[in-house]
Picture: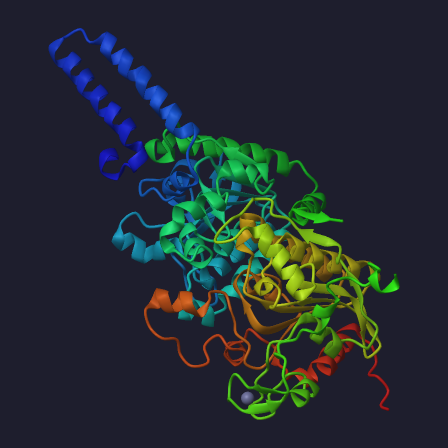
Amino acid sequence: MAIQTALDFEQPIVEIERKLGEMRALSDGTGLKADGEIARLEKKLEQVREQTFSKLSGWQTVQLARHPRRPYTLDYIERLMPDFVELHGDRAYGDDHSIVAGLGRIGGVHAALIGHQKGRDTKDNIYRNFGMPQPEGYRKALRVMQTAERFGLPVITLVDTPGAFPGLGAEARGQAEAIARNLFEMARLKVPVVSVVIGEGGSGGALALAVADRVLMLRHAIYSVISPEGCASILFRDASRAQDAAEALKLTAGSLSELGIIDAIVDEPLGGAHRDWDGAASSLEKAVLSALEELLGQDPQERVAARIAKFERMGIFDAD
Amino acid sequence: MNWFRRSQPAIKPAEKKSSVPDGLWLKCKKCGTILYRKEVEANQHVCHNCNFHMRISSRVYRDILLDEGSFKEIGGELRSKDFLKFRDTEDYHKRIRHYEKRTGMNDAVLCGSGTMDGLPVAVALMDFFHFGGSVGSVVGEKIAQVIRLALEEKRPLLILSASGGMRMQESTMSLMQMAKVSALLTRLADAKLPFISLLTDPTTGGTSASYAMLGDVILAEPGALIGFAGPRVIKQTIGEDLPEGFQRAEFLLEHGFVDRIVARPELKQTIGELFRLLQGVPAPEKV
Ligand SMILES: [Zn+2]
């Protein structure tokens, strides 16, 4: 599986892993003493991994964030909220499958969890609309958030979308209004809100689930005002310059943390979340629970005021 | 050396700039009629023949909407910063200077206080001629300032949108301006101060998907393009031509996302009256 879907820059790692596997099998099968060689390869593997993942380019991070084997919302739900009960529909028009919403327990804390959901294969992707919500998705999300608010349950959102869907129906049914409404209502939600960008944070379609007390980001996730491809074709006037756009947009967790746009980075297992779903899930669980613990201890009014103030501070400019 | 004093800023000539190019005559972009320029200006830049609402600058809107001499600007001292050292086909800091020179504005919104038929109001008037009305940190902060002013002085708020969306050169920080302004608008709602959103051509992208769609009352000028995704992107996605009138103000009215379409000459009276109705202010005495 890993070999089929390995990215270009992952190839050296995959190659060493393959050799190591062969060497181990040989050693087990023949009793041949290869301990020295195995140890050497293990050390090399660690070095190459460190080297590759300590200096990922913007574009490499984009590739990791979109990795076809990367865990999605439902994969995390399975691991973090095994008793998750999904709730469907926006009570107005339909049920959008690109957003999953429901209730469950995470580490004993009762909470609502809402996240974008991409598909794993073509059929699944058509069902999930490639993780690109229609207005109904955002309205379902808000409905479940407000249900959580009524019952005093904190809200956890997982962000992973290329963007809100640009279609005729989406426009006719108020895509802009649906996103705007979520920004407004999330800002004043009386319960704690923790958002984690787990993969692609695609513009307004991502932000509509991410006006939170704590915005966390997985190490190899991205968050941007526009896709590198869109930016390349509009600003660089050359669609093939997506890699340059990815650098210019400073869309990595590291850059966004420095800019104060996100509150914390959640580490991924070495080699990326797609190499170790359980490891990624447990890292995510720890980060969410620690944020929730802090937020649940705060006065609701003060928490809302602090949330609004946090976003109010955002912006970099000169005042002369 | 009076004539050389700095009190007369170098940007002054741009004040006169409007959507109408110089010359005695101009051609309506929609119906092609040749119009006498003076008459177009007197008609608030609306075509006599086909009612086409031409794009106009924030200063022209200020003069149309506010009582003469009542406007007091705020946030004019803020300057955009190229904090990402963003370079596409041009450096962002060069683009910033270019637009500052061209429009004489510090950024794509004109904010302040004033009166409408005597009623004190706070206004944010976006300007499509400045950087395509794109929203970066300065536009976000200026609108934030005008919301704070509305809260402090208990004024109703008008935001006029004319914007292609967020400013890509400020990347995710510009995206955050959507959350910033939307979050602050909750405080205006808590204070029970009315907010009217006026949508002009165009209002798209993140601007439409944030404060533009959050008005207690949402008005639009006739024919204005209003939508989340741009028509080109949608056309690309669905692979077919868009229906006639799609994403126009009339389409949004029909689909329930706009309260009223108001022709430019009626804007001031309509907005003032809505504010008075919402705030319990008696009707002005008939002259
Ligand atoms: Zn005309």
